[in-house]
Image: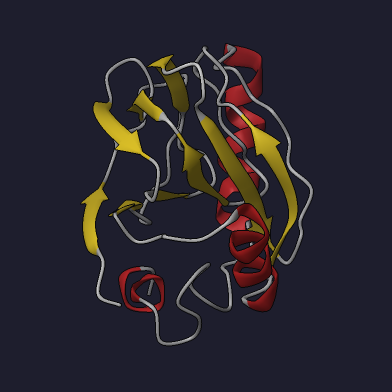
Length: 165
C-alpha cells in the first residue's frame, strides 16, 4: 500500500505550541478495514490505549504523547494547528497522525462520524485547550514525547518512519 499523504507543519501561536519539527500527516484512502482490524493493526505496530468516538468540537492538543486517528465511519471537517491552522476534510478510510502539541478541532461532521484513536506504546494522554497557563509546561513536555517505533498501519517500513526522522 502506498497511501497519498499530506504533510503539514504549523507555527507556534503562543497558545497552541504545535510541534517544532514533526509534521502532522493525513493519509487519504489508506484503510479498508473493520474496527477490529484497525485496532489489531494499531496494536501490532505498538499504538495502543485505543478508544472510539468523535473529535472534540474545540481546539485541543496533547503535550505528552502523539496521537493517531483512523476514520472508521462518516466524514468530518477538522481544523489542525489551532485557530490559524489548516482546515482538512476527512472521510472513512483516512488516517491522521498528530504530533504532540498539534491542536485539532472538529468543525462539523456527519452523524455517523467515528474515529479510533491510539497512542505510541499505549501512552496516556493529557488534554490542553490553549489556556495560557498550560503553554509553558507544554513547551517542556512536547519534545519529551516518545517517537513511535512503527507507522500505525504500515509498520517499520511505513512512511511515518521516513517522515518523522
